[in-house]
Length: 82
Image 1 (spheres, rainbow, N blue to C red):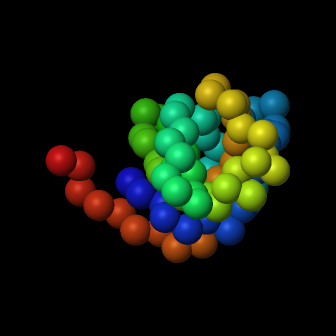
Image 2: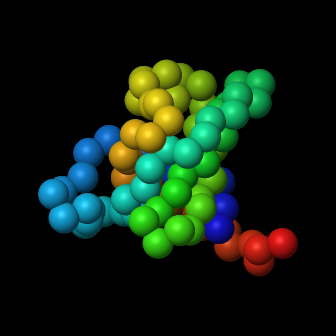
């Protein structure tokens, strides 16, 4: 699954791993691409999401590999696995 535009990516989750506003995921990988950063996220069900952030938003989040975050999709596009 590919999330190209997210309305919010933030740290923190409840003790049970759930979040009322989004999808709880862990940061797997980050790739800088010019003025943006592609963040690969893994859910607890094994699904993988990709979020694209501008560099300022990425710096403000201070993400590191393995961090738990909550992704709130704004525009969701699903592509078949290849």
